[in-house]
Amino acid sequence: SDLPFRRLVERHGATMTYSQMLLPERLLHDVEYYEFHARDLSLHSDRATPLVVQLGGNDPELIVKAGKKIQTYCDAMGASPPIRLNVF
Image 1: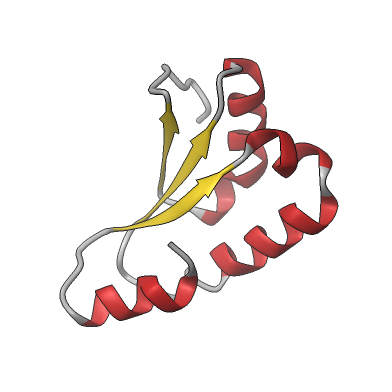
Image 2: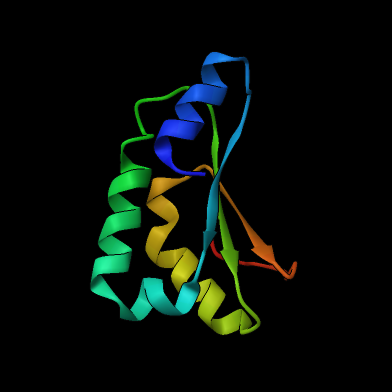
């Protein structure tokens, strides 16, 4: 979800929030897409609630590369379909 929704559910007691599904290819190759989502995720850093970034795709290498690029903005990552991520 985007920042306004994450803040809303935090106010109602959520103990963890998730990003919308992000596309690894675009995080790596589309500067505007990356900057938009990096800005949204960076605004979460002042919160106590953990943030999980979701990455979607079918190429494990791209998912890992994108995860490494965006790892500073989150507390955990998830992939769809589930793959084993050795990012950190």
